[in-house]
Amino acid sequence: MESDDKKIKIAVNGGIGFGSKLNANQLLTISKYMDENEELELTTFQQLYIEIPESNKEEIIKEFESAGLACYPVGNYVKSLRTCNFCKGEEREGMPVAKELNKRFAGKQVPFTLKMAYTGCPIGCGEPMVSDIGVMKFKDQYNLYVGGKGKGFDAEVGMLLKENLEPEELYDLIAEIIDSYAKLGKKRETFFKFWRRIGKDQLINV
Image (cartoon, rainbow, N blue to C red; front, side, top):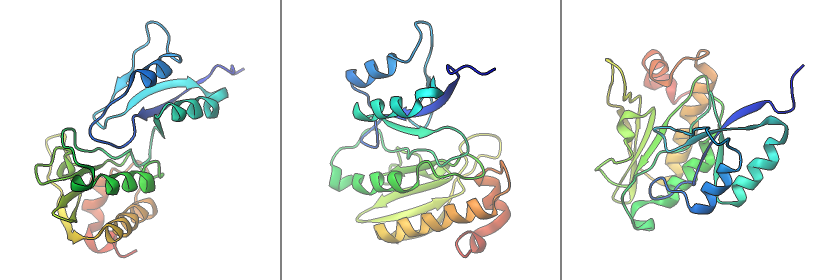
């Protein structure tokens, strides 16, 4: 018989901003739900994985959110947006667009974990060109890359799918891509393999 103390894993971070930062109150809030010798897993996508009791999951998530933490499901979902680590200047770097991308797409269910990344300039600190879906701000518009892969012998730079997009065009196109992947992707098929199998035309014309 299962105990009410069964734990589930969630991902948390400090929300979308300039780099991955947590304040003292956020750290204290997280530590309340950790044993003395327990460790946190820090992912390459600026998230911390923590296990919490399933029986009061909603209550704990509300507590985390009241401390300014953002919470996401772990598994076959769109991950929270990876962003630049160093730049400042909210309007200049397009951070409102990054926040909107995360709000619209993080947590959507897909055949396999999908990684999105954003960078506010061509330096590319957020590594958009080696992510499944990458956005790079250029002047006052946005370039969209797809199909990047940062690991393995078959690592590959993503393809520039469309450039000089306005924010609403960007949101609509990414929504179409994720919808295509959700509909046409095979179970546990990575976006990289899906992209190579399906091609550009089917990706954005479902």
